[in-house]
Length: 622
Image 1 (cartoon, one colour):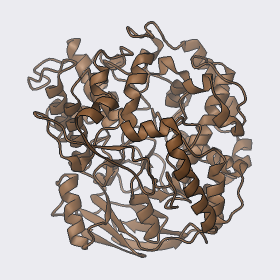
Image 2 (cartoon, rainbow, N blue to C red):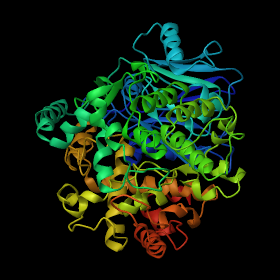
Image 3 (cartoon, rainbow, N blue to C red):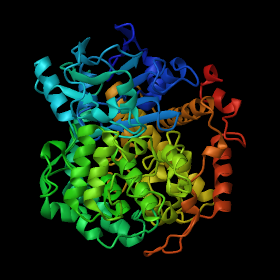
């Protein structure tokens, strides 16, 4: 077959068994790889109501059908398992070079089951794999562990996806890091890896898959190269990284500030992408085959010096440790980012946990006795950085915050309203009171609050050209919660979910404002790579199939329609900023939930109807 290897590597850590199974092209075409194919195996092989930290929770690394195609954006991979943070469906995608390297090593997926008696790492190289002892690197931070693994394998360019001490200590939002700066950040899958005593999955591959139409792929690569520099949003993203969003969101009144109490930050200019470029930026980096190079490499200034090996903070990180905690020091934010990359923690959940603790402290729920004499006032950069370490090392109050804000809030009476999460996962750095489509994606994301479930809705007030091929023909008010907004959200949700099934970067393709490729380019790439002669309809149906599978998994784990909601704070008005007084109508939101269920072919409880499951070819999961 073209573009894929048609093979899954299975590891049973309890039995120390490794085996290879074939994947049919029919199965690959139906599920596309990535999130969708991993979900298929997860539903079939994970026992209902199993312990996320138990041997029955498989951890699946999956590449998309087009992962490794030499085009910008086709570099990503997915990791799936049961989330220790939510108790349900857990997923996280990452960029860099690891995904392409796994594809070139001869495998499309790696499924890890069981629990090892002692620490190990998995070494995959050119159609072969083995488990190696990791006792000597257990406890090491990611940089030192990666160096040791590369020395042990003799491959200086081996790509290493690994956990740090936070994953080993089962911090519930521990992540998986590759190349020290690309993160499968959310859902706590690094903790699942830690529970299995699996320190790393290192890969090296020299077997590029064959592609059906190499000339077409070269033509598309040339087209992108000739067009991206004429697209101002892509150029801006290249110059300033994702942190370029700080100033526009601040001006719009939708920059999360002071634990989502405010919508703008007085010191936004000091933590912006523009400020980063002028002060601490030393280099830019990018993912496999991408010329945009939106990744930052920084060197923080004393007293918050940083190691450029760990890259630099993305927008989410800047906002989580910056405006959300009201910290105005870019170097402190960069050090917090480095600590998260070194210990292996999701920067969003970590920043949210600290902001939650800060609000508790300022309202007298936490005292100096609770914080080990740490002055946890908003704006205290030194305390913010110190708290990152305390969480990663599970010291003092950090031990409780490492459980996530939902569990932490059960310990401190009266703090529930400060614990902002959906389904147990902390809220990303986007204010839904100024863009209601974001509110819908927070509520409906199967993995808990997630800002990457759909393109955000403000641009579609004025311009829908990029999404018209998907059937949206009218602009929609960004604050609407009516049927027209639900339809827009559903379409955007299906589209971005498709990109996760194919493991494609959402920044390179429309309708994202930075996107250069058009919607129909995705079909051209898949066809050129695989020779399938697919259609946009077939691809979108595969996306809908995946959304329904993630819904089924959560229902099986006990989730109900009551979990499709938002924190109380978003139904209350913003206190300050250009959108002061803005809030989400609880009544309108409840109506939009029911409309979405109907549009998806789900019943009034949000359960997919049998007819919908039959339509999508999911009868085996009924």
